[in-house]
Image (cartoon, rainbow, N blue to C red):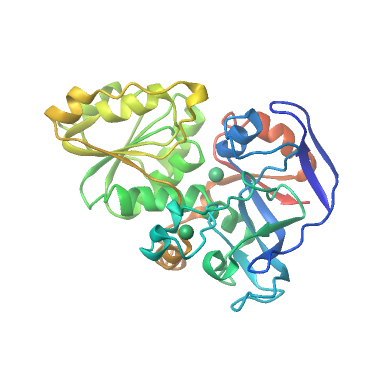
Length: 338
Ligand SMILES: [Zn+2]
Ligand SMILES: [Zn+2]
């Protein structure tokens, strides 16, 4: 198969022929139809993830068609249209038994723990636990982002942040996951303030329904009459994490969505505010396959429009440049030809 390979962290990204993957006994191989280019892929390439072993193929936001099935898989067949969460859960450890596969103790992640979906084929483990059937009318380019950024935003806003109608939600950082969070928060009836230094990102956030768009989080407390109920750091940096926490009203909920690899510096958490305002500081890490139906039904009803986030479709040959430049193009870039 063709795949985008890097041999050293931060080094050249080249498309070349590599061996086809084989399915694990409980896994499948998917012929990739679309793969989103996400900041987490950039972290993997940059050497911020200790799971990555060189040489490596990135890519974890995928949708496609099952091409091969392991002997122990019961629920899936060659030809099924699928996506999967970027955290592939084992299905049997304590968090998995509690329905929290997104924090599985024995998780695998395509593009991190093994080769990912910037390739014609990708192997996915524990297929009966992790695969999600795509509705016939959901295009693969739209579905790709569901595996990471869109599902992550959906769960961060609804499940972890528990944003309620009429509440103020501030989204700090409006890349792919931030724009997804804006859209989901608007859909659940929250009032949204979107923060991003990029004019293009702010324009997209406004088009997703953000009531206010700001270039920094400084004005949020005044704008919201005392602070947001829910604040999400959707970029993942020490500065945006702290800005998110500082924008909350008493008893507000901070949700950390963007990754914060220690290599980029650890954030300073204003714990005096956490105590004095009784703030909740929460983490959100993707979404288990079992939680997809609620999101898919809102997409089917037209209440969520992930297709509006896809601003650019590219070929695998251009994926290396897109990965190096991640964050510089507003919206979501998806590889749709391999
Ligand atoms: Zn597990
Ligand atoms: Zn991602």
